[in-house]
Image: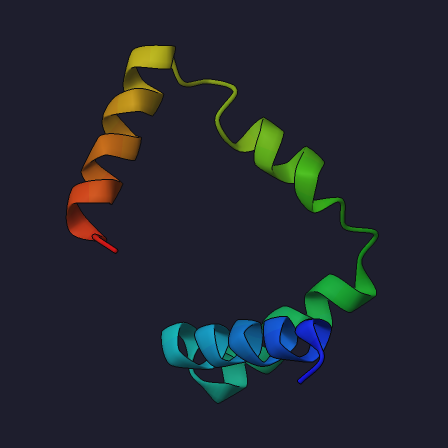
Length: 67
């Protein structure tokens, strides 16, 4: 299968699993409608956190979400 298709299928399945069908569709609609720069959004997401706070949040996330 095409890697792009696999990634798209995995992504939509994650959205549906976490948000449900309706909210997943709404999320996709928002992304398509807005001029959305994911990289810039992610950079700004943590700008008010210290390095220690970010490290602690990452460690907590890793504990709660093991591979």
